[in-house]
Image (cartoon, rainbow, N blue to C red; front, top):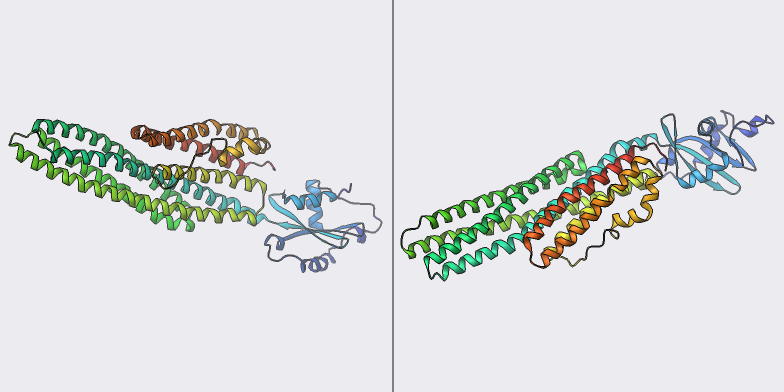
Length: 439
């Protein structure tokens, strides 16, 4: 095994290039380097194996001595694309072989690494969280859409049928009171969902703003979503006002049956018109959310390409964890698409989704190598992730069985559980990004 360092002084010219000859030799080998690779053009030192001899320059020698790197370890370091840290500066070794000569270039990557750490990592996290927020918005808008179609339309049909077939004023008034009370419950749920949608779109806009130029396009979409959510809430308020008028009309009725029924039918028609407006707003909200999530997924694919110019294992693990947040968001989108009839999809078991497959295969070994704190965060993902999947299965089952209220309750529970899963993944990813452990 060869150790890098000073040898016996047989001929120093033979062991190490003199400072005068190093630049000439460097230029000779640099001509054959792949100039398309940015990292290969930032030279810090050079080591040459030729004819059984080892030659080096001062910079390469200093790096190897500081890190106690043996000469015969250079090939493995170059192959594994390890990053070397020396006095707050970072290097990668690239290898070029020709005939019996092997040349190792010590390329400084301090600048690109700091750009990755300070810009790309932050951008990647912002985009992943933006996708998640849009995914939640899409999920809420889809279940709201299905809910209004089923519940409100049913209430309207019943009211119109009762009013048109009026046999007895007292009987009709009782039916109206019952339907109005159902309408109030529906409105409470709609306003609750609208408020959450409005808050989610605000969060998404904030994340888009943090993402800078990449997120600028989505900030406009997020604002549109927020306005539509507000409009949905206003539509619901208008319906509530009409309902109160109906109640007042019913309670104060003392005129003839014909006159009362005509007033009620007119109000019911207004109710029907406002329902159409509400449904239209929800459809538009749903469309904006769908477009926004596709746009952000495209931005995310560009973020993943940064691994090609910065093939660091820790950075790749960090991005793969953020990708689990993106996968989680797509899972929620699929749940909503199933209940809205857009796709036929069977949710995988919590051990078979993207996060589960990684968690129960290589995940534990990968995280254990980093730190005890990372491993504790890793273990904290399992329970909320399992509960999320169980609730998701219940959500779809209740919708299929027309148990709408139970399905809506499951949907709200899914939002809270998904937030816990995403927060656990986010904390683990950040812990890995800032740790000093080499992986």
